[in-house]
Length: 459
Image 1 (cartoon, rainbow, N blue to C red):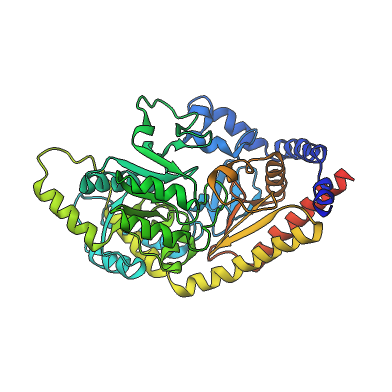
Image 2 (cartoon, helix red, strand yellow; image 1 turned 30 degrees about the vertical axis):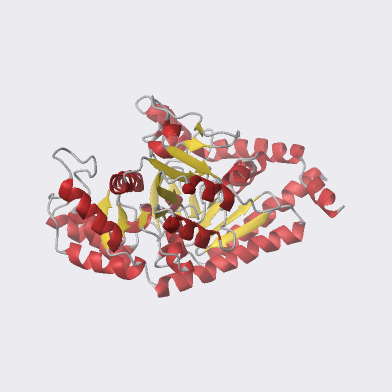
């Protein structure tokens, strides 16, 4: 009975009414961004320098003139409190002074040389200390890092297949654009220009499905499991109690490498999520924030994996490896990675972030309780997410069915028109060192106001 009453509080007509009103308001507020969008469309694919920027789902995008700390300033001189933070790329804030200072000073010593800088030694030590893996490589993006990891895994195991979880996202890595929603493994709809059958070498199981995972690994043909320890790109899907431990045990038993892609879950703590929960993978990947928003990513391996790579290289024939790009491991990347590790990837920094993230989590939970809406909120470290569905999904398939709903779009428009930015692809919010209690309270109050209006519209 209670559930039916709750569902009736926000109607489809109320959602559509808010969407129509907020879209008109967005257009009225942003004439300069609209004009810039029209001009940009003359020379840029879909009017943007990177085509999936349009996934914000707006009539036209905001053009940003400045980003500092948590504040975005657009072409129409509106200011926004930013909880998206470049979809984690600016996880420590926009242009933190220490990063900007290092960038300015290091620039005078050259950007890239195709030779190591003296920072390499210190950065290697810091990486081992923070993440517990002794051997590392630098790439330009996490997509590059994931591609490299898959190549190494296949090379040293002699196995061609990999395993991912349904609706996982590991960047623009061809092998991972595979789903299993319809009872069979299929390539992702909309994948551009892929001539190969990716399903021949990629297995897909649901997150938290231990029997399916075990069956897939027992066949003995999987080189590695590439996984986020918490799914984050289809909304946040948490691991069941004991799931990651079982995943680790099964990969060991089947001689399968376990690689955690912590590009998003790096926000869990100074050593990432794996260190927080005490799971030791064979490899780690992360990118986006590790150089303060400058293109850089890392992948690391255990000593055992490094030994196997060295053995493989000793007997490998001549020819290009297909791993590495010219600008990877540059002087500027190393200088900035060192700064991020020393200044931000610390217990002290994350302790403060998590205090505010808990405040945000509680505030959103209070809104849900106050209005008795069938939503839920989840937090992992300094990352918070709410879904407009009552029960937290346990796997990617279920999560994919409940995100990107009209109500999510309405909420996004409402927040944006009132100066609050959250991640456009789902309802994710990040706390950074520049975030204040006032910023958090503003988001909570605006969401409260939005929910109130939706319910009043339905009355």
